[in-house]
Length: 320
Length: 286
Image 1 (tube, each protein chain N blue to C red):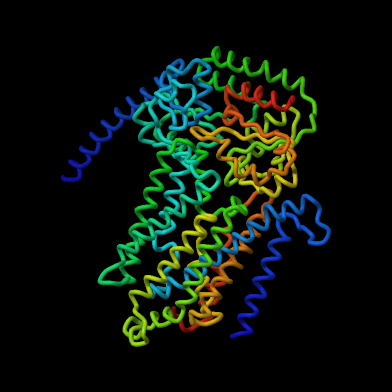
Image 2: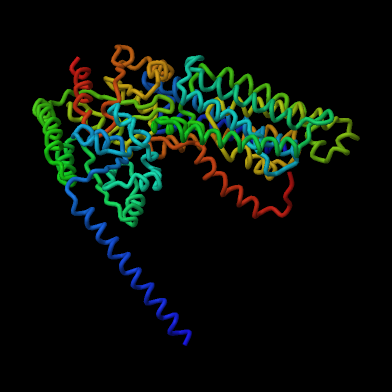
C-alpha cells in the first residue's frame, strides 16, 4: 500500500511539471526568455495550481460524500451546492454586479454555495443528526429549483453575449490568477484536514449506523462534521473555476479500485487522483485546438469515463 | 349498398377539399403577386437595423428580443431569440415575408416557415466588403430598391475611401468581446473585416470560429500593439476587464495605455459598420 501511495504522489508531481512546461507551446525550463517567464508565472502556474486544487477538492469531496450518503451515485454537486453557486454567480454576471471588484464572481459563487449548503443541511437535520436520504433529496430538490431559476435568468436576459459568458459556470480555469488562490488553498486545506481527520469515523459510517454506534461514533454528529468539510471544499472549488463534472463522481470509484475503500487512504488518493485528472484535462483542453480553448470539464469526462468503464468491467465486486 | 353511400360521402368530401385548396391557392398567389411586402418579420438584429435604415421600419412588425437598434425597433412585437424564435409568435403576426440571415438563424426554421407557406428572404452576405451588394439584392427581393440603394451607397462611399487609403500599418490588434472567460473576435466577423480593412492584423486571425474562447497565453505571446475592449449592454466593461488587464499589465499595449474601450457598432453586419470603422480608425491612427 505504501508503495502504491508513493507511486501516486510521484505521478502527481510528474503531471504537475508536465502541465507547467507543456501547453499550447513547450516552454523549456532551461533558458527562459522574459516572455516565457511571464507566461509561466502569471498564467500557467496559477492555472495549474487551481486545476490541482479544484481536482483535489472534488475528488476528496466525492469520496467523503459517497460514504456519508452510502450511495455510489453521490458526487459533490448532488447536494445542490454548486447549483446555488452557479445561480448567484450568473445573476451577478447578468446584472453586472462588480461590488467586490475582480473577486465579485468567486465571492458570489462561494456565498451562493455556502447559503445552499446551510439550507440543505437544515433540511437534512432531524432528531439531532443528519439523515442521508433527507440530505440527498433536499439537495436534489434544491438543485432542480436552482437550475430552473438559472435557465429562467438566461432565457430572459436580453444579451446574447452574456449567455456565452455564463458558460464559465460549466468549468473554466482561464479566469484564475494568483490573488484568489490563497483563499482557495485555505478553504480546501481546512476541508481536506477535517475529512482526513474523520476518516476512521467515515469508515464506520459505511458499515451502518448501528455498527458505527458500537464503534463509539455518533453517526449524526460525524455526518454533520463531514458535511461541513464537503461543503467547504465544493464551494471553494466552484468559486475557483465553475462546475467541473465527472471528477467528484468517478475518481473515488477509480480510487477504490486502485487503493481499496479504507477512507484513510481513499480520501488522499481521491484528492491526488482528482488533481491529476483535472490538471491533465486542462492541459489538453488548452493545447489541442490552440489558440482556442476547450473547457476542461469536457476533457475530464472523455478521458475518465472509458477508464472507469474498463475498470467496472474488470471487477466482479462493487462496493462503496 | 353501404359502400355506395360511403363513396358519395367521400366524393362530397373531395369536392369540398378541392374548393378549399383552390381558395387557398388563390390566397397564396395573391400574396406572391403583391408589390412590396407590407408585413415584415426580422429574425436578426442586423437585419432589423438594415430594414430600418433602408426606410422599411414602418413595415417591420416583428423582431427578435435582441433587436435593440434603432430605438423604434424595441417597440416591435418580440418573436424570441435568433437561434430559437417562436414559430407561433411569427405565425400569429401573419407576415408577408420573414427576413433571415445565414449568420445565426437556422435552416430548419426556414424549412418550417416554408412548409407553412410563409415566404422568407435569407441574407447571405458575411463580409463588410460585400455588404452594399447584399443590401441591394435584399432591396430587389423586397421591391424597395430605392431605400436600399441609398443605404448601400452610403456604406459604399466611405468603404471605398477606406480601401483606397489602406496601407499596412504593421499593427497587431486584438478585439476582446468579453474578458472572463476571454472571448475575442475571430475571422468571419465584421470586427475582423474592419481591422483588416484598416491595414492592421487581428492576432486571432488563425482562430477557426467567429468568437473563440481564446488563450491568454497566446495573447501574451503574440503581444498585440492595441487592445480593443468591446461594449456590452448594461455592463461597465472597464470594471469587468480590470482583472484580466491587471494580469497582463506587463504587456506593452497595457503599459503604454493602448487599451481602448469601444462601442458595439461593429457587432452586427449592418448600417453601423461605417461609424464602427471610423471609431477603430481613429485609434489606429494614433
